[in-house]
Length: 94
Image (cartoon, helix red, strand yellow):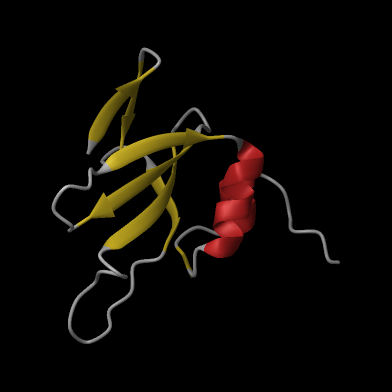
């Protein structure tokens, strides 16, 4: 998917997948009909791709800040990229 936001192109085909909630439940890959994917561009800009199978809902891309991306990284159960690779720093232990 590709979307132009603020004069900049965001494309799922060329960005790196950081995390998602994609999950195979032995019947389909959809979670309640919608999946969320966190991506990082080559320029280290993060965006969410929200995909849906429901009629009347739109597939969308939303640019998020680094702090919002870190929050989504913690909320999305399927990490595809390590924290350091995604954000350039090691996780700090609580």
